Length: 230
Image 1: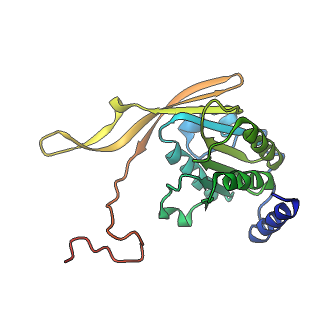
Image 2: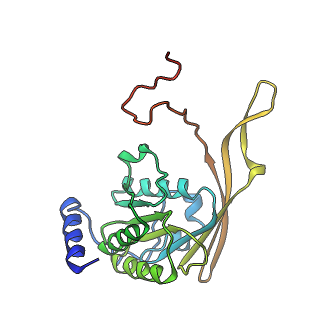
């Protein structure tokens, strides 16, 4: 991307987010996700500021935890953005953090680099966009300049200041029961999370509620749901 295009994007961000303050200099403590049981396994009590976090595979529950972290940023008066390379986030995000759905992986990486370096976002999450080691070094440099936190769900062989892995614990799932006492539907799922950093290694478990959504016959939320109507 040319220098002129980068300057144009910075001016665009400044116009639309005039109250965004660069986060440089706030790196002495971690960026709290608002999930206390999760923050306890993170160095300095939160996601590292100015450095990259890679949530490697398996990444069970990563979307639920990081989306809650994004909303926690908003509740604290900070800004967050999710770069959705998989296009899996639902329409319910309309009132939540800024969501970017790039047309190509290359655009997603460029957006991430510019947003990280802008200093206007406390947390940038990227999922569904492959990145090589050289690309991650560029993103790491950008987040260092911006001072926010960067979390990427990707291959755990990539270098990062903090590595996370999570896995389901099926034996601790809670099920709704049928009238005959048989398990019918999962109500809560428990996951184990491992955090590894330089001189830091911790594990915790989180229990996440599961919500089932009825499948609509119309994809457009503005259209009537005509299930069962002749």
